[in-house]
Amino acid sequence: VGRFSGRLTRLRRCSAGGFRAGVPAVVGLETGLYLWILAAGAGLAALVATSQIAYTVLRIVGGTILLVLGVQALRAARRGQYDAELPAARLLPRGRRGGFAVGLATNAANPKAAVFTFAFYPQFIPHGYPLLPTAAGLGLLQIGIEFGLYLSFAAVVGRARAWFARARVRRRLDAACGAALVGLGLRVAAESR
Image (cartoon, rainbow, N blue to C red):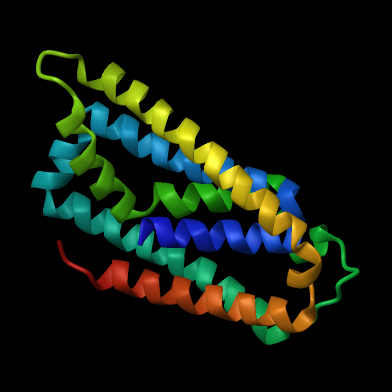
């Protein structure tokens, strides 16, 4: 779920605003992931693993954020007022800070990202090594690799921006992204461990 919602966020931002609009979203997504990695390294994994309340709060908040992002995309598709000549600022009214915030919210409020990092990172930290610094280092390695991959994705989608800016394509993309994010939000909110 976490990777899929991140892909949708990157695709939507890059297709509407090009590479420059995609970069803040990538930075936000990776920052959100790194926060979970640091939380895992700080021992928060044990709290969420043992506390049904902590997991439930995380699940409901994450599901709500995905629902809001999905509804925004569906509303954009419903309005359907697209023009290939419109500046990215009209399609992405929140600009660079908004792209970062959407990316950050997508991963930081996603319980699947938390569960992944909480389950994944501790097993790769050798016995006797300090948990937080080792998790932080491993996280920087992962994020460095992902930055390269996701910025390449942003560049490719950004180059195809003229195709994505066509009203018919833009509307279908917004509708597909919106429906997928709403579905993911409902799934996250309703899912138990």
